[in-house]
Image (cartoon, rainbow, N blue to C red; front, top):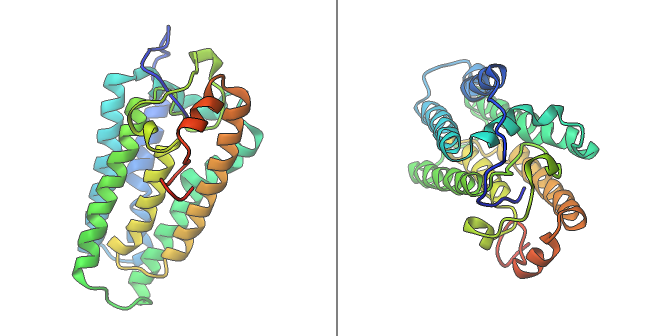
Length: 239
C-alpha cells in the first residue's frame, strides 16, 4: 500500500498476541526446510534461516521506532472489516501458503537430491540478491506507514498517497523485493525444483499487485495521478 510521512493521530498498542504470532512466524516458518530435509546438517539452510529471521526482526524493529502504529495495523489487519474480499485468500497464499510450499520443496530436494549440485558462486550471488531484496522491501515499509498486510483503504489512519523513497521507482516496491527474494531463496539453498513454486508465488504477486493497483486508482484520492507519473508497478521498464 502507499504511504506518507505523517503519523496517525492515535497509535493503537501493539497487541502481545500479534507480537507472539509474528515471532512464531519468523522463527518457525524457515525451520520448515529442516523438517522437510530431515537433517540439521545443512550450512546453506542455516544461512537462509539466519538471514530470514534477522531481516524480519531488524525490519520490524526499525518500523517500531519510525511507525509504531504500522505494527499495530499489521497485527490486526486481518480482522479489519474493510479488507477487500478477494485479498482475504490472496494475502494468506502470498504471506504463508506459497512460501511454505517453496520451503517444503526445497527441503525435500535436499533430502532426495533431485537437483544437480550448483556452483558455489550461485549461492553467493543469491545471498547478495536476497539481502538487497529484503533491504528494498524494508525501505518501502519504513517509507510507507500504510504498508498493511492486507489490501484496504485505511480511512481510519488517514490513508493517502506516498510518492517518495522507493515509490519513486515503482508503485509497489514491497512486492518487488518479496518476489525477487523468493526467486533467490531456492538458488541460495541449491534447489532448482523449488523455482517452480517460487514462480507460482511471483504470479500470485503479479495478480495481487494488479488488483491492489486497480483498487487504489479507484478509491484512493491522488493515486491515479501518481500512477501516471510512476509508470511501472513492479519492475522498471517491464511492468
